[in-house]
Length: 273
Image (cartoon, rainbow, N blue to C red; front, side, top):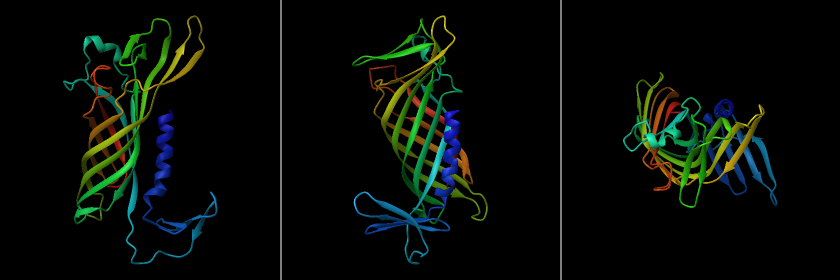
């Protein structure tokens, strides 16, 4: 439910960001121009700032950069080194509940860096991504100095046990647009995403023995999750809505500290193409 609320809120917020076309900084004043208005952010003395609407236009010859907000939302999982979703017998306790394992990415992307007219372009950006791994079995994760261990919990009855990892990411994609400019165009993007982990935690909901009251627990730890990851990404869209797929060429956990697993995600993409 929280992911759904965040998705709706982000979509609302993106409506105004899609309209952003230009900004520039002049001494103590930053001007942000949207489709219909121009705003001023004025740096005063100390830490004081003021925010107001400007009635003047940008100079006609100012060529600003257009930033857009894009979003990927879908299911999250991992594969074995043999590209299988079926885990070996020794790792079966790590099977995921696919319907509750989600991936959400929000990126600010540079639009309009055309290479060949407007049908072939390059688009760098910056953003955040959150990967949730919800486990099917009643497990518990524990860590040592050089090992992440997964074991069955024989005491607590988990209603939910979820490993969450959040990353700061820098995507870089090559894009293609096909079709008539006056109609919804078909878009294709391929590229790579470099990411750095900024947080990780386990969220647990469980019932105590002989007690029907639901308990909650959060454990913050690095869980020997790989601090860096590189994803390959592909998106196919019609207009501003489409499908995406991502596959990590780096392992979820650090080498030799946990089972060798490679994250992937599939779902819907929203944004400007």
